[in-house]
Image (cartoon, rainbow, N blue to C red):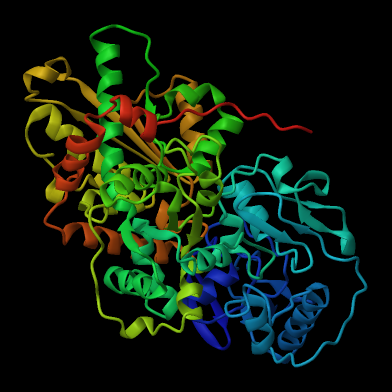
Length: 591
């Protein structure tokens, strides 16, 4: 422990922490634009400068470790002047167009400029016209707004380990972009949107689908339905100043009705459907491997997360056979809406528009994949992020806070608590276990409150093993088998797990991988700024939603039973295989 002083306040802090971290323990605010919690300090933006007694220059607090006896000033005249000058220099390169910018209401640079007292333009830098990169289906990059804070580089390289973005050139010529200042479409960008989630300004944003959705809603010849991902209900409230982790499911449904949707449904219905198909697929693979002695691709990997699918296609094509053939719940819903729902409601599927409300930017890309049209039409037409849905509600003048609660429509609105937890890292695995264990043994998963605690929480890679006992006759070959499972969230953690499997250092039967830290609750389209504390608040809300439901297992959802009886006939059957399953191929970039 070290003794230091910050702003005349004596503190006892742990050695090895930075000045910024020490200040936070004393609830002393030091602004920063480049820093990301728990990641390698950069000291790039220089906004967090502080004055330390005995040093000639101001120091970047995010990158300076504390020393015993330090006397630190975070708000001296020298610090205030330097900090204001730094922000003025950042503004000189920032072509913000604040009155039209997507980030005008939550721009960190704009807020900081106001705090440090900037009321006019002091420096002007002559630059070339900004480059606008709209090459991908999910993201837009605006070089004119970029302030070179390098947060996107940290998240892309250190956390996701995708490596799509780097600083190019030097000095005033510095540009944050793919190699050789190419467009994102030309590199292995998985379109996860984590760069957009951490960008403090509007330099990287999602591709806006709001105009298309409004046009569909205003077209009297179209029947427009919406599906809402489980993670939305624990985050949408943040767009209206609710505390992170506040459940707003009922208000969200009411708001969607007021926007004019003809059907308000739940992606959770399709998540329950996914568990039936994916669980049956896993049991089929295990039977082929253990009974028929066939060479089967194990472990089976989950396939719900489109960023993870992209990552596999680019970096780990050898594992493509291991991916579950199940489409994601979003895409299953679209296929079912334009076939089963259309048939049941007597609507021409050509007149149905499916809109998704998702926490994820990569879902925009997924909806446009060539494989996603087995209904005979594009399964999903538009994808709104949580942020976009919040903006639509605001555009419509809806008083969200004072809305009454409402319930989802039938038949695609009923779901189990198991479907809710798809939002959390470990949730898909737990949902699958609740159903598969009961199918194999005839008894309920022997876990407290149905939760599999070893795979809950924010540890990057989690493992659990369970020995099957009491298997029913049909699955007697699994009696005594120790089923080994693993969960990873964030693609950097996924890479660690994949390398471990490739090296033969670990064997599993089923692996869940989510692209974003924390799972979908930390998706690239969620309200900014997402910290681990916010992730945990959202995770807790999702578990609360699950625990509050009488129906908590996917296979007990009566609407799932009905869709098989009336339409799909059986899991992995001919119709379900055609509509609900797909396959992926290795991607090679054309240079």
